[in-house]
Length: 274
Image (cartoon, rainbow, N blue to C red; front, side):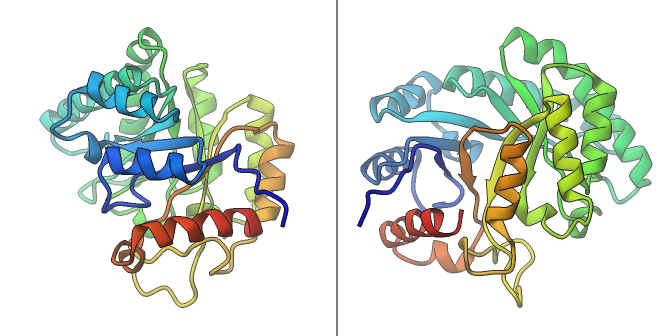
């Protein structure tokens, strides 16, 4: 059997949630995975310089930091607190050598989606000088419409493209996550639009299981569901994307399993289905 080409494989620390940052780094390196996306929960209680050292000692490249965002609120103090938290995320990303912070943009069910989108755009615009100072870009990640009530008022790639183009900054772009966007009949067109604007910053993969037993914590391993991953990969690559392919799986079922065995399944599924 020919050796697997894992040069573009990235795994999110949230995918192997039971592991600490150090455990993620050790196991990913042992598996030949060169890239990782760090979720902020694994940084809790750690000195950032020490955390960056752990990553560097294992020879891993940090693709991005997850997550910033959650800008909208009917409460002005909460909106101000969100800006402060996003600044901390940018500082964390810079300290870890992550070129990108992924934004789960947020929504407030106490106001209209239009109002939430306005607050999202204003929040990102206000952060851009801070992001530029720290050499960190911001990626708007559209989420599936099932999350429109409280997680994100940005629910299609078209909406994300509209916002990125309105902001018109090299420090903001788009993260395409197949779990959230696979269903969109305009997906190919909007991915090509990303390419024309040079806005496509990240590509996340997993699968949509049928039936899905939990809309947050039952994502599938690539090949377990109905998403045409290779086709979508072709579209993002035709749009000029050649960065890491990030495995982001939220799954109570997989988190309960032996994580070493699970990581081997991830590598095998990446090769076969991505």
